[in-house]
Image 1: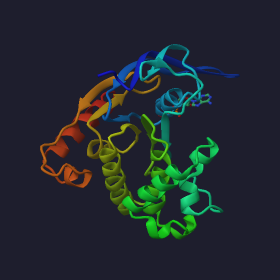
Image 2: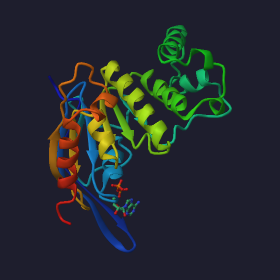
Image 3: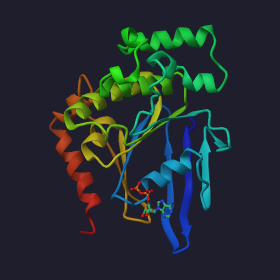
Length: 255
Ligand code: ADP
């Protein structure tokens, strides 16, 4: 099967008045359809830079990025985002927030309205459709943000520390919840996180980056033999610690 995303020898440097900061060095990897990959690395190593390049917000200095076999053009219709802040608009109802992306693209019709209602019902937000975001809990807000992304039917979901604004207890619950929704949707996901437990509990592969300029230190495949393979069950499984320690060791190799 053709990969959804292919990065080939990506390099990137920032140029400022103070000089050049090399952020990414020779990054290559592919994402297979339906896979869930996490990227971890030391703070300031270049994780956000990597996501910005994949999102097409910046262009690599050298190397190539292919989305479904084609070079990233200025049309990024097939990439969805979930960010640290949910960016829901307070003056819109939950329903109208969910429809926002389609509205911007001029694609709201009877079918998309039906789909919005279906997704809201499926993910337990039906009774909040007419509410304002401020009436929702942190977890429900993230669900609404995810529905707004999924309704655009993106080929690839980019998740940039989507749970880090939540307190610890909520974060566990919401990452479990959102992780399962993404799995069930069959979407390909790329999660950037500084939280190793989150990476191990959600993904099937963890890409570990070195210090800046980031290159790939190693790729750790993550698989659990669980009857019910949910993020929460993973956290309680004996293998969890093994994966965590392996990634931790890779991350702290230079210390
Ligand atoms: P991470 O997401 O891993 O914390 P970033 O990708 O944000 O790291 O940044 C990587 C490096 O690039 C950092 O050391 C940062 O100082 C530098 N950097 C990021 N953005 C800019 C910018 N706009 N101009 C100059 N340097 C930048």
